[in-house]
Amino acid sequence: MLNGIQKKCIPAHATTAPLSQHVCISCRLANQSRGYAAAAAVAEQQDQTYDEPPVPPVTQTGPQKAYRLLASPVLSRPPLLTRELTSFEKAYYLYQKRLNERLSIPFSRYFYYKKGTPGDAEWKRKRAVRKTAARDIGLYSGYGDEAWNDEVLINDETAEPGNQVEALIRDAEGKDIVESKPVGDPETGGEQVSGDEMMGEGVRKELSQQQQIAIERPAPRFTEADEKNDLRSLNRKLDRALYLLVQRKDGSWRFPQDRVYGRENLHQAAERTLIQSLGINMNTWMVGNHPIGHFSLQFNAPETTRIMPNRLVSTATDSYEQEEYGEKVFFMKGRIMAGQADVSKNEYGDKAFQWLAKEEVQERVHPGYWKSVRNMLTER
Image (tube, rainbow, N blue to C red; front, side):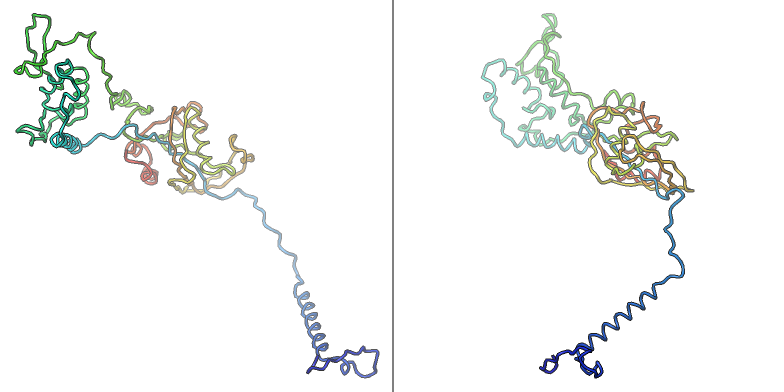
């Protein structure tokens, strides 16, 4: 179609005139573009001819070059007790108890004891000694002329937790919270004790050994393992977090560690390391899948290591050589729930283990190693 007039293409055999005079302009342009494309394709094929054959891919013949990748579980025993109070905290809590005794309005004792009963007489006797209803704030009255004097002096042991526990136990046993002065005639069948001999009330005889009430005392904070300084025991430093360290073949102390095999991740490698280094007699829990820290060490010279397959890793079945330029250790957080470590069947050659607090860990590990792990360990 040219200028609104449709022209018909005439075959070449239908006329003796030149072909270009009987071919429309659009057809001639199309034929020219096809000719240019064919010429370009021929030229491109000629340019792709090579004088030399292609170089084959290079295959590695020597050992692999890499860093030694290790997973190290940081196994800890959390504190079992709250920490000991400071002297300021002890004085503060005692002050709060005495202040509460001053501000509160207690019920009448007849709310608890019927008048004239043995319980009422026992209450009056104890109240006369300690001057207050509370049993763990010492000799203090919140309603007398000395009620304002609710602070203790320096070196006073009234605020000590052990002294308060002893007062509660003595009260439960039917005794006064402090030692009372014996009164009465010893020749009439034993001594008698009274909270206030001037008042002359609530006098009673001491019970025999068989008649005394047995009150269970709380377990001490300082255990037998603390006395013996048994670093292998979990029953020491109950108010501190303890961390498990092992002594390696070269005598150095570190957290348990082993290389990562096959396709296992750091979490799996840490769990396997605990089994192969410290036995199966521990109930442990690896907290997360991400490391809580890392340690890097550069070797003075590359070390060629023959890596053998591990029996507990299904994806590590072949042995191979690896040229290692250093080691990178990734630490995984873990907790022990029950059981105890056992190095008798250790597969890494570790000699011993110890449960140590943070400052004790610093005394045993290398300074460079300590710099990488110190921020992962809690103070208590």
